[in-house]
Length: 607
Image (tube, rainbow, N blue to C red; front, top):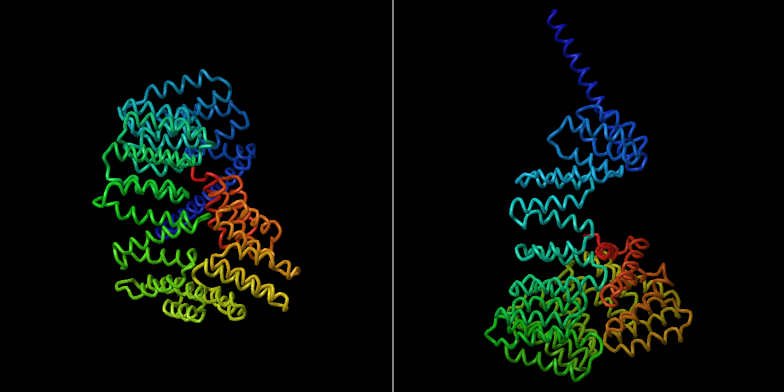
């Protein structure tokens, strides 16, 4: 019986002790959180009161940094020195605490004593990669970044390896925005670690401030190329550097020179041309493809270059000012490709591009119709490609005044690809055709269905068209104005921009009280963008953003402005401003996520 009593007493004692321990830990956790919050808020007096109490426990060494820094903020140097000396005695093997003492001396203005501590520590570095890295991290911990760099460089000498600690040094240089050292480190490491090239390009583009930075870097790259002329990574980096300055021709000259010098197969140049195209340097890209074609048909890049050159010429001659003669020549070249390689699934791209030229630029819609109808009979074409061909054919039927045929094709694709992106696209084109014809109720009904489409772009387009119709069919006058607007949209669809603008301008004259002003501005902006008149487009979009803040097109206008200023007008400050306005004022917009991504990228958050 007595044993049971003793056992029960012991169990009760253990439970009480455990509860006390848990309570103490809870109190400690609360005090830790409170002290940290005081420190973050800059209330160092209150933070120190709690930290002094916690640091008195030898098990709470982890609070050293915050306690030490709080004392420095309050200029309580004697107290700071006391805790440093105490901790050095407790942990003589840890070089973090002598570094803290050096930082204390720096704060007091005793630079010579601080430097003596730092120099002695670095001088005693062993040939041990772990200890070298640990010391550098301790310097970094106390914000002595230059000494962290010095430690890593000394470590390279000790271990006889200039490639060690690359990532650490790059991170420090990035944090300090030390452009010269960042350039040098990347140039030194890239030959052995070419996979770092995308990172180098991204980081440097964020940290470089003006053209002079790129020119300085260009000089450094050229010096490296003189010493290592066959290093492909330097050629790629130099090409990127030229492109950042919009200097496409020098980039091409370097690539061709490298290809000739190394007797390469053209692969580096071929891959680089996509960058020219992405930046709208179509003429430079065409010259590059022409060079690759001189390698002859036996080259693996001959046919791809021929195909891509046609595609680039298509982009050049349909993106702004063009002549009928140029387009006719391009169509002839597409036809020549089809004559040489036949009409099959591998040349389907050429069939579609040729039909597009014929339908929208050469006033040969009947030829386009015939070509697309024949393409549907080509064996081996995938289901998705067939669906897209039918959509293109439906559009051409509109041009050849066969709207019923267009409706049937759209309906066929819509049912075949029910709830899929291409099926939703077919349904939207059907709604759009109804809109062109003035059948607003049917068009609106189709749009109502599409507002739930999985494709966000289609859903947004459908929502905008639905709102446009709903807001402008309240009275006969509204409906008549909307019909004129639909006629203008139809003219733009037919690629008759001058006639479309004339029709848009006439809406306000015929119906001065109409509610379509923002839609008219958006339509004009799209026409100007297509004709490469980017400043005029920006002027239209600014009017939408400034004067129609509650309109259905405003978020679209802001995003398009940001995109134009970033990619076409090359004004990063303006681009950031419009992206930020979209993020702030229209957080629910379908464009907000992409705008946030673009804004952060332009701001340099990736650095």
